Length: 172
Image (cartoon, rainbow, N blue to C red):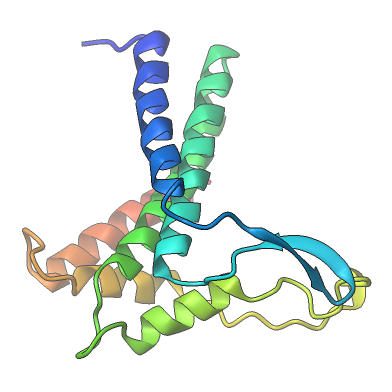
């Protein structure tokens, strides 16, 4: 059964509305001075804000996909699918505490890296020496595989996630 662009747009609109309602649960970002430059930042930096922001990005990518589709740029949608898959994985890895008493070291590391400022010298980004402590995607996929309640065992879940990720990566 074929789906029309109107049906796709309607479904994305419903997702967008749901994410908009989710956003009402958070204090809006505030304008702050960071190394003398003003920028919007959330006062709280936690797994819920991260998840919300990743959902916002996913909806934006879905909307961009419709525009690309309407203009015949079907191949470029694959790249956005990879981004959406990453956003989904990022939400999944922080959604369930994986540590004994809450978030695991991996989850804390992922949160810290997400909220880290991009540049340590904001007025001279070219000379910025900021080092990011990126959590490798393989560790994110392994974290997702350890979430309780998966319909498959952790080893197979990890392999499934890896296979999908490799497929999107190869496409991009």
